[in-house]
Image 1 (cartoon, rainbow, N blue to C red):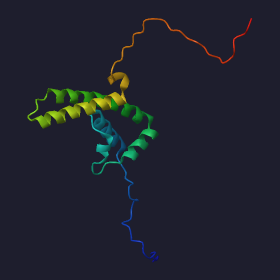
Image 2: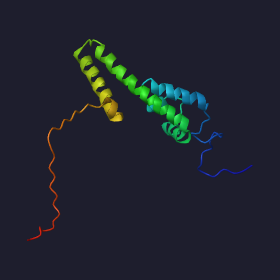
Image 3: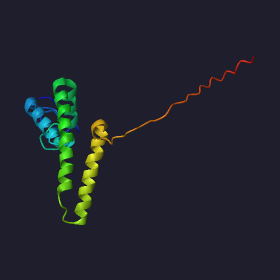
Image 4: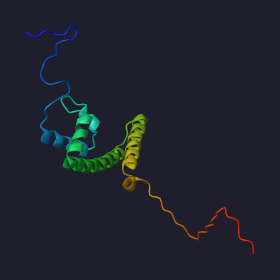
Amino acid sequence: MAKRKAGKPRGPGGRPKGTHVYDLPTIKAEVLKWIAEGDTLLKYCEQPGKPDRQTILNWMDEDEEFARHYKASREKCHEAMLERCQNYANMEPETPVQATWRKYQIDTHLKILRMVNPARYGEKVNVDHNGGIQITLLTGVPDEED
């Protein structure tokens, strides 16, 4: 029988801590659905028995198809966030505190949407320019004297 080193507690055996065997197709489909419905990857990973966030990010690095589907799910997530804003705006608040909270939720969702996809959800800026442009080039070389 091999001797144990003093001071090291005996582990339970099996896989090292943090390594799991997942049913990848099922977990990946679950993640994509979760994201498309408007929830965050972090919130998904905090559930018991789910892979950690870095594991899922590694899967995206290793699997281009999964990364592509994840990106499409994020677009659906943005639509879900927009729908939530509409629902919050249409709910009649029961108290002034609830009205303030709803406004805060809507503002936060809209700020996130503007940050992640400014072309689609950002403020539209219309720039009309009427008139000419005058350019003066300064070279630092003195003018030639005649």
